[in-house]
Image 1 (spheres, rainbow, N blue to C red):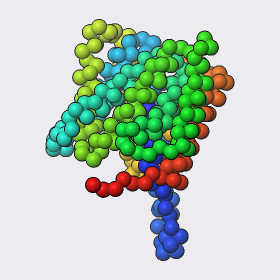
Image 2 (image 1 turned 90 degrees about the vertical axis):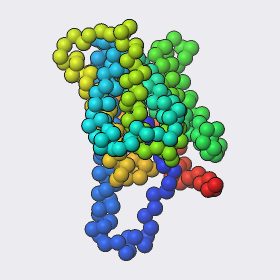
Image 3 (image 1 turned 180 degrees about the horizontal axis):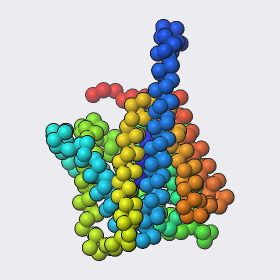
Image 4 (image 1 turned 120 degrees about the horizontal axis):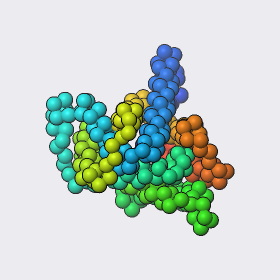
Length: 322
């Protein structure tokens, strides 16, 4: 699934003094770093779009649970090549095991919901609903993290959910039940993002990444005997393996992107993923969304961009240190 992130809530400051004291080569390097980060972000989003498109394609031949299993196994294999107890001693040691297991389960639940939704919905429809994740995170950050959510943010969140209603149109006979799966996946991913922020102060990125990979396999493997269907061709095996590659490679590119540019700059480009989904959906499946889907997606994206703008222009006040 697409990896949805929220702006860091920090202003991007480039004081006038810097333009005076810094030499032109340093200023050029500063801009090149930002451009490189944006480019890496866009390639990562393309990988996530290919992941969803591949999952939708293989779902026509195998059960979505098989696709989820293949996605976790191939991603775990690639992850262990880089992060393992040998290269990262103590990587499996966590200070908050219950929270790690909860985070892993939330990611697994989100992936399951997304893969099943992709079997029935268009790529653009699922992605448009997933764009509600930043809105949900902003809503949950208040009661769970103690962050203040003002009226401006609450208004943007409410308008964003109106956009979701425009996309799904419940009560008009056009909503596929799989839309509820996609929305459930977004809710699970929002809680996953919140728990990830809780773990950031206690466990390393390597530890959190390993637990996500291993736990996903543990969660899905017991169900395989009940849903297993052998892929019909070597091509199908290859496509199943690429789902893990797209996910792992995309997340690696995200890390590189955030090392080169602040989240406040990168986050708005998340919404460019709708373009890739539109192209892949039309080329691979002949899908073209109706006008209401475009309208609803536009409302959700506008709400998300407003929240990002509020994070940059009016960041939350930091909580006092204990």
